[in-house]
Image (cartoon, rainbow, N blue to C red; front, side, top):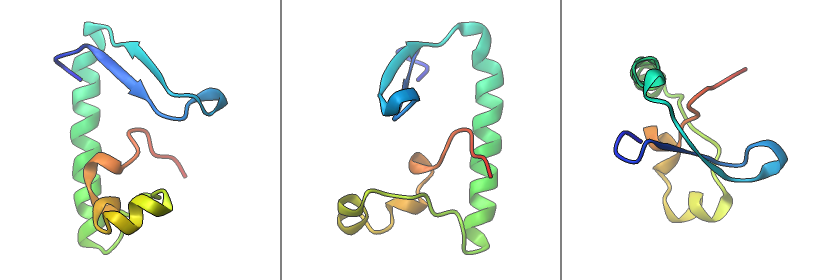
Amino acid sequence: LYTTKQIHIHAGKGRKDRITFLPETLWPALRSHLIRVATDHRERRLAGRGFAPMPEALAHKYPSASQSLQWQYLFPSG
C-alpha cells in the first residue's frame, strides 16, 4: 500500500477488481483507520468472532485464514 501508492479493490461495483492510486493526503487517515480495524479485529477474535467469509476452496486449503487480519474487510458494515 505505502510503497506502491495504489490500492486494489476486490469485487467492487459490477463485481470487478480495480487498482487505483491513493493520494498522499489520505494516508494519515487511512493509517489511523487500519489501526482501528486491526484493534477491533483483535478484540473480536478474543471474543471468538472475527471470521471473514472465504471462498470454499481457500477455506478448505487455509482453514485459519478467515481469522487473519489480511482477509478482514477494510470498511466493514452491518
